[in-house]
Image (cartoon, rainbow, N blue to C red; front, side, top):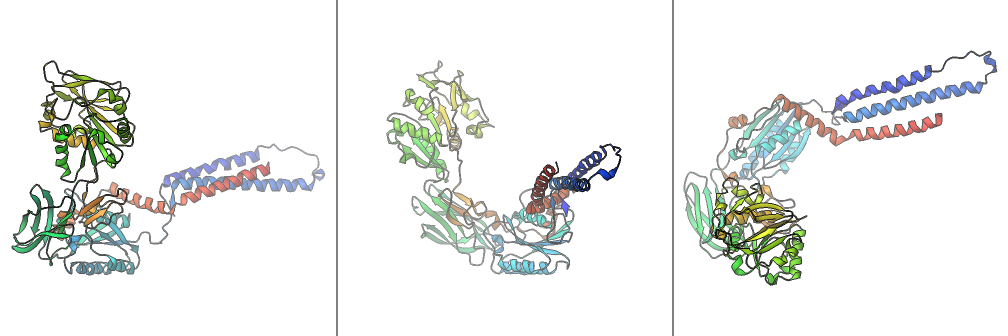
Length: 613
């Protein structure tokens, strides 16, 4: 048995306390002279003997309880396998999609079997399968059958290569013991993150067995929708020009197809076919001899269903704001809906995360209550107090303590504004260069009085320009001017679009969840494979694409791979050993049993003590 915190065993010295007290109490009674023992009854002698036996039992129970308490704090654990101290060989098999050239993974399996068979006779042997994440396929065991069987079940997937994950997991299996890691891979150079090194304890050796990849590959590494249609980048990793058939597919139907010569390196492909307003769009290249995983790339058309933004106001007030948001919506960032104030009702705001309130004309009491409920439920609201904003309604929307005055013209005819809280997320892009906002000129503003709130920006006269009002769950901002190009020139300034995007990001308190992700970033419950999928919790559609870096043909040599696998310091090795012990102890939890046994002994001691009294 070993202990995670052996220093606590020093607490066992506390057993000396009840032992000393036991013997001190025995000697505390003074002997008394008595005339003749013949007059004492035999029953008294038996009672004394029984009492002494009870005292010894009480002493034993107290000592055992203290020993169990010290052991519980020391956190005992047992090597249940009986294999402690034996060297470990871990084979790490690369299952990223760059290993899926025709016949390549079969060669990788054969190399991994050879590595398992070549492990020293006394070694435990385990298997790790990895791409962006590493998983233990077979725990270290004395035999070889479990590792060989796990090799037969391992298949290449759609993830990218990450060597650090493989080495970290393999080193965790070895723990504080000596061992070796054999990485079976194609040597994908992008598998090392920039500046990353696999730091391992000094007792672990790392070798790489490289599997030769295929001769050439055509990969779709980029795909996007433009104003003219769609555009893609197809990379030819070979050294000669190849002919490839490129297809644009919308909703499962081919809308454009062309046979094109593809020169070595990246090739930009433009499509001019008319695209549907919504649905799944994909581009595909025919490449029978290359990697199948990177032959397609996906894109979702239509408004984003992740972060919905509502613009409440007249069309003239929402004109610039809507275009600024739709510039991001084209990249799947926002879904934008424009609502007249009279049309604000419960169904119209379903799924909305942020609201820009640009006017209140026609906004009835029920609609105001709906907006207040949206903020109370965790949503965001920015109210622009422009020409069609009624200050009398501010209490319903912004709280009873907010006082908004009538419009006023600055003394000099125009006023600028400046940031008073540059740390606020709404100004994130302006932290290094706030000058773009300083160029804005306001010809009319409103005076805002509020007893509490966070002033984010000030007009030139020192009055609040943008304030954040207190809200328990949501986020509430007030701009003391408009956003429709009537009272200021903000919409015509270059700083307008980034401000709108960052403010919307902040207002949408639940954050932006991108609709297009890499396979390695698949959310929980979604199978990590390319294509369209539905998030189980959010119920929204997303698309997953493979990591384009995995299509890079650059490879490492075995020597270069070994050079990237450095050695950790002695302190780091000690940490690894402690982590290994902690994992074993946490899995067994013997300290709970020690505490339970101590509690039972203390109950028995209490009962016996009352009986002896």
